[in-house]
Picture 1 (cartoon, rainbow, N blue to C red):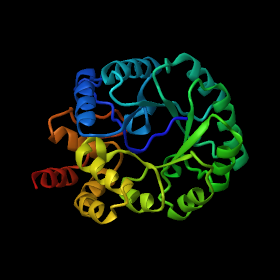
Picture 2: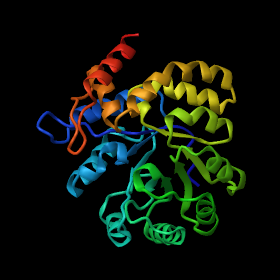
Picture 3: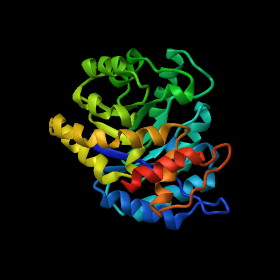
Picture 4: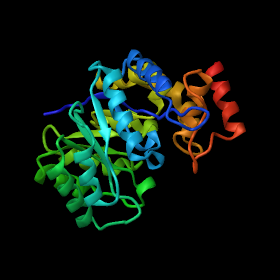
Length: 290
């Protein structure tokens, strides 16, 4: 069974000044992240601005990521959507042979019932060539996948191996952790809650902040895995301002501002997202200057 512990990175998609995918910068970012000590990479998550990427761009990004990572760390591929039948077609058209798993966000906008969410994921798992990691992010989807639904999927659907829980809901996380089956991964999707969530037993994080701060963030997560929460807190305290700056307006505008100031990417997003506001960008420069 696939086991992913520690720091995964929901990698951004760099764009050139003219708006096309910047593969050179993507390669540089992959190297920077891996050299920073992270355990795995997640490509085509929502941090990668997948809603504004067409299918050909997604396929090119998947292929490039596999090639450039070159087996240095595992790669998880984001394959999500709110049309179950269309999503099943994507699973057969994307080249997923080198992926260790797929990450699939809860259907957005449709706002299905808990039974609808269960049947959606059951259908995906039945057609996926790779193990499935659930992704609960109600702030984006408009619908929370409740703990009972997650636990039901974990017990009844063999190809579902874990969940990225990004609901900012500690009680729900603790309910899942309390009753999860052995080997079922529970992964944080909230950078600012990773430390207390790992103290409750989570296996790690799929992080946004680790795009820009992989060394510091992965060290903090590793200390949590070692149960050294006192030392982890020292690092986390230094990063709290960065979390606030990264998520104050939208993701990935915040982390892209960090990476731009670090001269890794252009500060370019695709509409309807726009770069970080001037005042917040000044805060990014101040933070990095320290």
